[in-house]
Length: 355
Image (cartoon, rainbow, N blue to C red; front, side, top):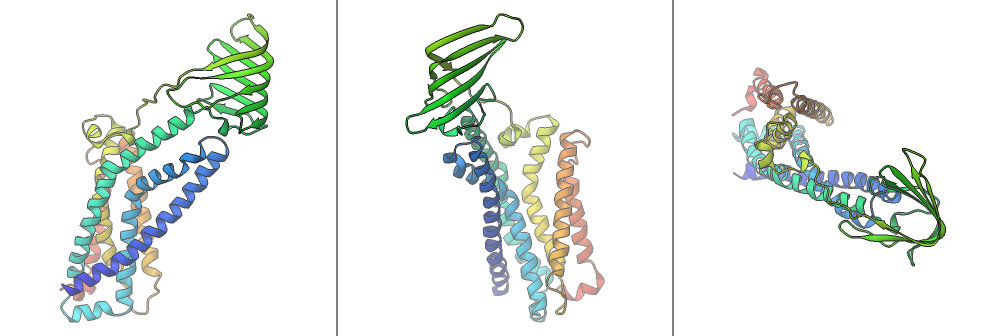
């Protein structure tokens, strides 16, 4: 019992360290991407932190199994190098008992991964899509950079301003192109007032001292207007109701007959099993001799991990494209690491460790 607790504790320590490191790297990458989008006016800076947090939740279904897998490799490899496995064997604590201790921990991690994959991940995707849709719908002066053409509301408007007074919400030397169906409205004004606009709200542009051209794209009925003040309404943005399977509740996917939905459902339900399979394979892959390089086990383990990830992703795409049936779907991929585990555990020269 004490050895079991010791093994579990030694695995948990690098696992938490690994999770922290992986989340930090992932967050840094996401931050760079979102700040770049914010600088280009695609998303407001105020929602960057929320999007990064949601993306981190989505990534946890992959980061948690990865951290567990690598921590098992690191811990057991150290046991072999430091001859702790020899001492455990001498006390009657063989490799199968090590596996039993690891399985108990792996089952707990698998449950957490399952909750994330089945419930937290689609919820995070729904929140992320909603936030991004609202950000695209916003027609906010904060998005506009002077001297640059900006597309807003899914390219329905193209805006250019030579100079911007953000404090007063005023634009100088303004160009606005708006799509009117068969006609295209092009407006130039010396000055314009642009209040913030959010999804579900009605706002107006107020232009001063300029010209407006209504161009007939199907004929020659163009109209030119000179004005001292002109109001251009911004239509209310409707809610984005497009179907996104990554954001669909798992229960909805379970009853769907669409191949892409089946692939998504199998991916979600397989992640807990993948967590457990990786933990099992990590045990024999960790074997090493005291004089063996400390990096050997990691190199082999990473190759196995990458190979499994590539095969799983490929199988998921094949199911989504209808190239392979829903059964066995992506499940056949996991027979390969299980066969590898059985093969490595059955090597006769290593039987002395299993008691």
